[in-house]
Length: 177
Image 1 (cartoon, rainbow, N blue to C red):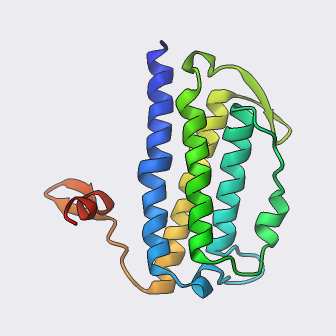
Image 2: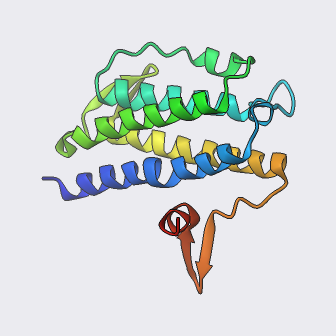
Image 3: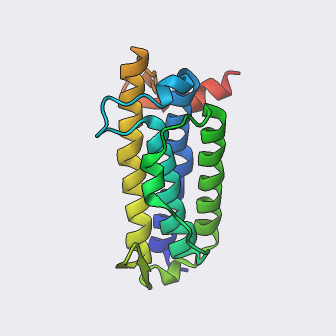
């Protein structure tokens, strides 16, 4: 077993499933369908477009590029979508996509992280493909958080602080329910 590779995959899975997804879910709990599809202007993306884009990107790079599934992504459609897809449907799509990504990463042989793949016409290593998805998800999660704060005029209260320790509220709230 490749200890470094194993840890890289484990941390990547953690960030996608246990960090970014709960933050996005906290946003979706607070937003109406109209807010999810609001755009500041024609050059900006709505939260709905960002969610479709995250699903398309993660699926293309991990499930297809790393895992070998057929790639049928239509990237332009992710941004062109204007008709509102309901919150619950977007949430379901996001969870399903991340479950597929997580399953792909869970079964991936960490000794093969340096293998080459062609994804979006670019020659990359598997480790680079995984890193791309985690960083890409992080960036757009931040945009979703910011848009949610703007649209709801509220603090998302993502963390509870005990001294200098930040405890994720999605874990502490769940433990207290």
